[in-house]
Length: 189
Length: 189
DNA sequence: TATATGTGAGACAAGTATGTCTCATAAAAT
DNA sequence: ATTTTATGAGACATACTTGTCTCACATATA
Image 1: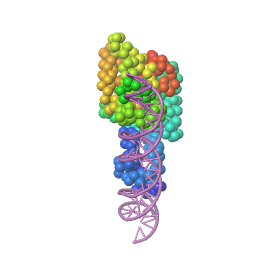
Image 2: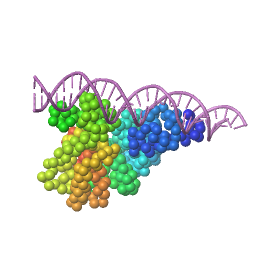
Image 3: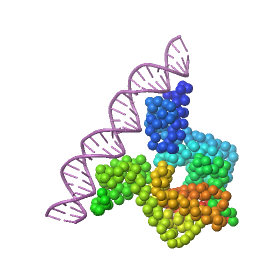
Image 4: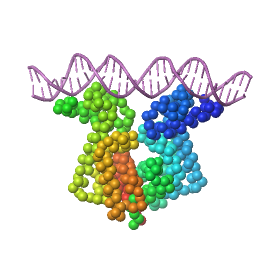
């Protein structure tokens, strides 16, 4: 199954798409269900993925690809600290559905997530930006970086969720997130 | 099984304790596992709880009891808006370990959670406090109440989680939460 | 002490998920 | 046109989970 054949490519992507759509909604979905959603025979699923875990890992890898891809523009922008964090939010917001998969496997799959070296990489970049923002006077030095990062991640998930429920547009949640994160919910004094 | 017998009371609470400890870590734990953790025979588990769902519901009910109990002191304090929100955080934070169960079942169990009338009640009280805070000039009027509430809830879970991992004390996460929520992560200007 | 009741161990049935395998068929590759 | 390869359908074995039931035993209760 070396993806030289059109059919194999199609089957594979159909399976990944199905998992990406179904697993966040129903994390314990059986492989029979996923194969059915993909419109692919269950046996074929096993031809592409040796096990359930292999499928999940592959979907995670694809999600990371999209995420890293979305953040690509930043490579040439040389932003740091607060500006980098805001720009990242802006670029990540439209990827809501992909992030959703990642957030579903945040708890259960922390060991799965951390298998991907890019996970640690992205975490490190976030930490770096937070520490730069502290130096620049944009984030309080007395707040643990870990707390700031958790808050940042959590706000991203919250923002996506609200957008997915149709309660606010991408632009709106981006603005809300930025304001809430840096200024809090209080009016400017 | 009317809990007239010491043994029944002990078994029941051991099972609830086990579920409370294990399910947040491993949401798909089998009843065999939970019974083993409780040190109770699996048959006895079924004598107390008709089904898996019944066990989960009971644990949720117990969690709500604790939560409502913890917030009891506010009944006589007549706080409103920002002060009510801060006081609620202060009272809820020490319940971290116990109430992590609720956050685990936040997504999956939203239908389970909303079975409990106290869920809607607490939600309404939060909404009321947020709207009071808006009137009082403590929360921006241009922020949707829904967004503010989601942020508030998520910060509570984040704080619980950080405390549960031993990364910060109760007092610390309480302070971090309050500051982050109302002022944001930026230093005071 | 005598009775009532909760319990543990284990058998049991039914349902479901995982993973392997075969074979005929259809569609790609050459 | 011929060969190669992926697929679908389904059988099959294995294992696990849920939920029920029985029986001997231990422990509350009276």
